[in-house]
Length: 147
Image 1: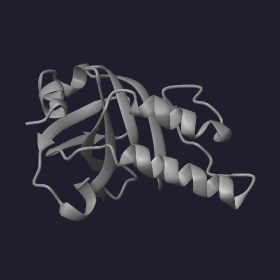
Image 2 (image 1 turned 90 degrees about the vertical axis):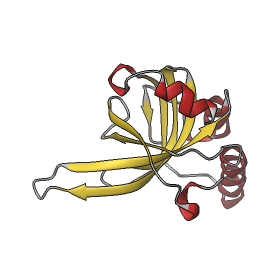
Image 3 (image 1 turned 120 degrees about the vertical axis):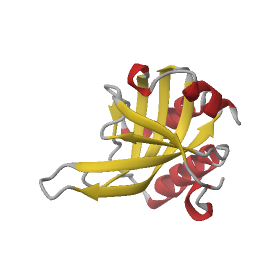
């Protein structure tokens, strides 16, 4: 069990408090990004591993998690500073750069920061990363959850 599993397992998901979310992939809702929780204090990469639609526009999404070291989310904010700064808890930076070189440099830095993540067997159910409905253990899916 890694530190993320211990931290998230020590609190009910309904009591988690989000500090900062950076969504790096959005398609009718968050698909991939990073999250820093204030309570419990932890940081992680999230990646949508399952979604369904009830036919009335309500989606259920589950996200696999990978633990990030403390400070990784702040490093990501600094790396993406050319795209603006977060003005609230949820930030979806507009991926627009002045030059192709700036874009390549930003992507390389993002990849380097995300490469610091470590595997986890956790998944969460959330619609918005402000409130969490469930946290559960899942089998690792090597293509999506391996670091």
